[in-house]
Amino acid sequence: MSMNPCDIIRKKRFGGELTELEIRAFVDGIVDGSFADYQASALLMAICINGMTDRETLALTLAMAKSGETLDLSDVAGVKADKHSTGGVGDTTSLILVPLVAACGVKMAKMSGRGLGFTGGTLDKLESIPGLSISKDVDAFKQQVRDIGCAIVGQTAELAPADKVLYALRDVTATVDCLPLVVSSILSKKLAAGCDVVVLDVKTGSGAIMDTPEKSRQLAETMVRIGRLSGKRFSALITDMDQPLGSYIGNALEVEEAIDVLAGRTGGDLKTVSLTLGAHILRNAGACETVEQGIDMLEEKIQNGEGLKKLGDMIEAQGGDRRVVEDTGLLPKAPKQIDLLAERDGFVTSMCTSDIGNAAKLLGAGRERKTDVLDLSVGIVMRKRLGDPVKKNDVLATLHVGEKSDRIGAYNLLRRSIRVGDVPPERQPLIHAVVE
Image (cartoon, rainbow, N blue to C red; front, side):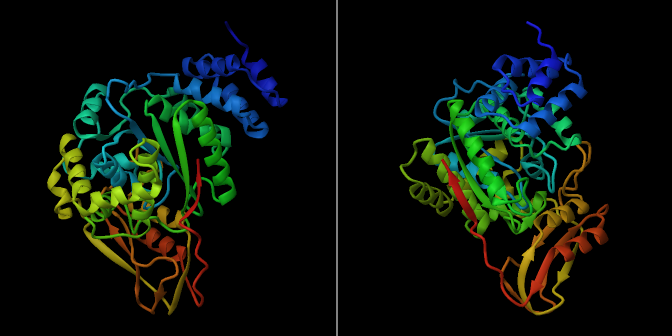
């Protein structure tokens, strides 16, 4: 049954509610090319201006999820879980919570995209481990999840191909931050990947897609509502991005910090958010009654070394050198380090997280374009957190610099992004809200 693209666009332009059939026709049309780019762009803008009802958003999410292959994990025993972050700086939670949750007996089956951004995605971080491969076909992926309880691999199947087309168009038509489009983009991939339980980490602050707590809450609530309408168990946390989550920013550097957390050598905000997200997964999967119990279970897996061992098992199953969990010196190291010094006494009053992320990108840790090649060894180590007292000439941060890094650009951007003043700032909560 053919539907005229102009009729669908016109209906949305005047604020009408699209039917499931109309939405399916639109999604099929962008995948098979019968909808022209300019027609899809016009509809995206109409959606952006007039919004979508929950019914429309669910229909769009499901149509996108079914636009390509979907993973059927029903032949993997037990509850399968996944986690998604809307992306931030120093946001290394997956490498910590995936092995810890698996060590508690809940399967973590994670297929990740490459991700554009300040640093590489989780896949790039993993690829900084010598020998590790993120390519597995679906059967091998499932077998690894059966055998050791967790896997993080690149998307092998054509999961939600409609999202690729729409994302590219949103990027060039100023419709990236439109709520129903963000929700359907994220959830379609999660639903196509076949897990039972999904926990979302929605960032808020200067280094996030949604820069205010109100916008972040709206995104989190919509995603949880639509996710639950699809029949899966969803929760979301709204977490703070007014400073980098971890102290290490960059691909190999973030792996090192994740290993330090799993080994019990370091704590802080990164650990807190990782354990809280992991505890929501355990509770939603029925492995414990309360989030507090879940945090205790995960903490115990750090103390007894099982979390770190599980990361080693996953690295080994994916062809990597598992000795890295005992010796982070095996990770790639940048040839040069440059310290950024405080110019006065005072307190760290603010950070522009997105600028810190962009400074890491100038060093070569992140991509502008899909084709960019990363330097997995470079990045930034933050030596101070918001509110910390500093003396003149204290080290605020250390740049790990490679051969091709724009060191001057990165240094200057980093210097501008960290403010030192006379009065310590009022701190935002680390976890702003939980959306069930």
